[in-house]
Picture 1: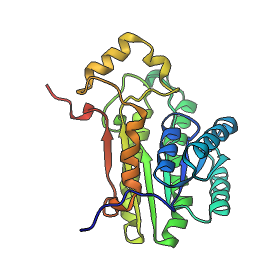
Picture 2 (picture 1 turned 90 degrees about the vertical axis):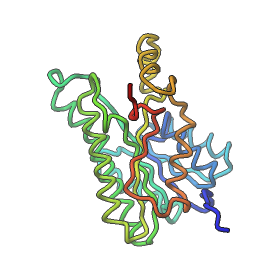
Picture 3 (picture 1 turned 30 degrees about the horizontal axis):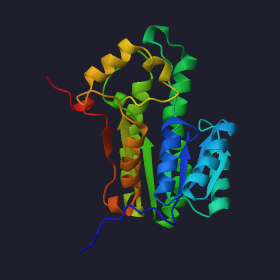
Picture 4 (picture 1 turned 90 degrees about the horizontal axis):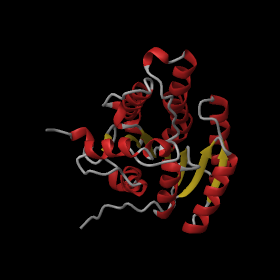
Length: 257
């Protein structure tokens, strides 16, 4: 009887925004599943520490690379460095993201451009750079980190939701274009998971309780709960799954009366 394999031994993964939070957790999860990992972020100190600790914890090879994912030249240099170091890229996790907590009437053009460049344009540029390599090899797994905000509206942070909705549609588009080349492209859309990015907001008891009450599971997510969905999409066990967006949200997007 055939058994689905979720073992990533022998694979090489590239993870953006990997210095902390969701990206760091996913990078370590992929390493525990057997992959060697290139960690990309703008902060050299964060990714150097993360790479060292993940290598010590998992025994997998890691390499930290400073990269501005909103800059095409920086992306191409980083991808070339990964290829020089590991010889291939099997898995790409587009995780880097940002937000500006302003409403539409207070948002500046620079605010809009910042969020769109990091959250949306960067995923196209990184996927394009790595996708060329994957298409040529006839193999690849791309997972984009979107958000429940791709479906639900927010009280503020106006450009965040549209940028993540764009990520979901780009995921579908690339999945369609590269399906015959052995490359799958999927997305996961998390709800609130405590990270350095939102820790201050979640320290507000009233706000945190509001979120928990809005969630059918009555709790926020634990970062470790993001690992299995990503590993699944990256594995040979999901070889016939592409163009999908999986909500990892405790039931928020399924909320009813």
